[in-house]
Image (cartoon, one colour):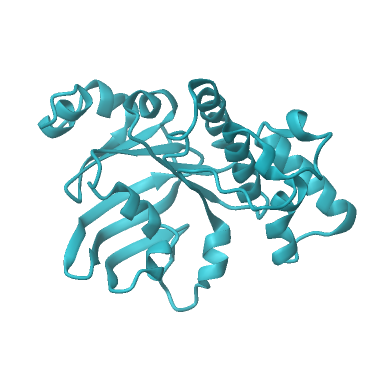
Length: 253
């Protein structure tokens, strides 16, 4: 398929102190697609995900080499504001983390902080984000109620709406369904599939069937190396590497 590059990764390695967690990772992530990273626990996929919005910068002793470009801009260039980067590359975590405030204020938090909207424009933005996150119909009559009263699946969709509220280009998701029941997982998967029409979505998942269902591209990590990266149809159907074939068919280890 014809694709436009969104994120270009060149020779990225990463260390936690003296422990090397990533080894010479190279890939090109397409725009307006879902890219999934799979692999066993501790293989480096979540570490790599956090490199994409520089969340690893907060870790003492962490070091990255190589280059990550977002729309041809090196994200580690001195001219790049980390705050602006994290608006452009939003993140949804494994466990829903709504703020202890109302549903409305959760979604409005980012736009208020960055002075993106106020008054009626803010109301319209909150509504749009909740609609885009497939949550509006469930919460439109209780926007002033606490977000903490929502179910786990609703809280995760609220966190997605909060991420959308600052107009990111890329949405990172680190195991977004691992704490959810099957029905909530299905809702989130449907949402991810819709979101790629407007955003580039990059997801880490241990659920191979989930990756196969919703992703356009898949990267398989093993012991800090990107073993294989390509279309999900190819990676799951006719993988080029024996390690990939063993992992996706349950013969790993």
